[in-house]
Amino acid sequence: MVYDCGSCMVKYVLCAFNFIIFVTGSVVLGVGIWLLVDKNSFIALIKIIPVENIEQFTSAGVIEQASYILVAVGAFMFLVSFLGYCGALKESRCMLTLYGILLIAILLLEIAAGVLAFTYKSKAEDETKNIMKASIEKYYNSTDHKDAVTVAWDALQISLRCCGVDDYTDYQDNKAWKEQDNIIPPSCCALNSENQVLDPTCTTTPTLSNSYYKTGCYQKIIEWIMANLNIIILTAGVLGLIEVLGILFAFCLTKSISAYEK
Image 1 (spheres, rainbow, N blue to C red):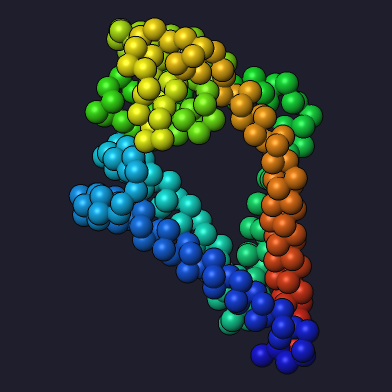
Image 2: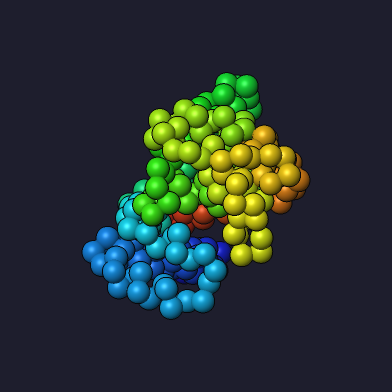
C-alpha cells in the first residue's frame, strides 16, 4: 500500500480518469458487439428516434462496417484503461509499466505522424487525395444499397457543399457510376432544409446554380481546418498533455510502489 500523500493522489487520479475511459470503452465495445450479433433490433430502435435522414445510417452495410470500427475502438479503450485502472487500484507495477509503455507508444506514433505530415507535406497531400479518390471509385451504384463509404461521402458533400475530391470528374473513375445517367450524386446538388434536391435535373445536368459540382471537397476540408486551427491545436495540446501526465503518473506510482516494497 502506498501511504505518502503525493502517491495516493496520483493513484486515485489515475483510477478516476481510467475508470471513466474504461466505462466509455465498455459501452462502445458493447454497442459494437450488439450491432454485430443483432442488427435488426438496433435498426428498429434507432428508427423510433425522431432524427431527420436517419435512414441512410440504418442500412445493413453501414451498420456492419460501423460495428467493426466500434469493436476495435472499444476494445482498445477497454484494454488500455483496464491496465491503468487496475494497475493503480491494485498497485501492480507490471500493469502500470505496461500502461505507461502503451501511452508512450501512442504519443510517439502521434508525434511521428505529425512530423512526417509536416516534413513531407506535398507527398502527404497527394497520398491523402489518392486515398479519398480510391474511396470514390467504390462509391455506391444504387441509393438503395449504401455502405459506410457512401454515407460518409454524402455527409461530407452535404455539410461542406462540395463534390468529389477535386471536382465532379472524380466520379468518372467509378465504372459503375459511369454506367448510370447521373453525372453527380444528389449530395453534390443544392439541397433544401430537408436535404432534398432543389433541381431534379441536377444529377444529370449539373450547373453552378443547381450544384457544387466544380467545388472539390479536399480544398473545402483544408479551408475548414484553417478556420478552426486554434481549436484543433488546443485539442491536440490537451490530448498530448493528458497522455504525458498519464505516463508520468504511471511511472511515478510504479517507482513509489517499488520504494515502499523495499
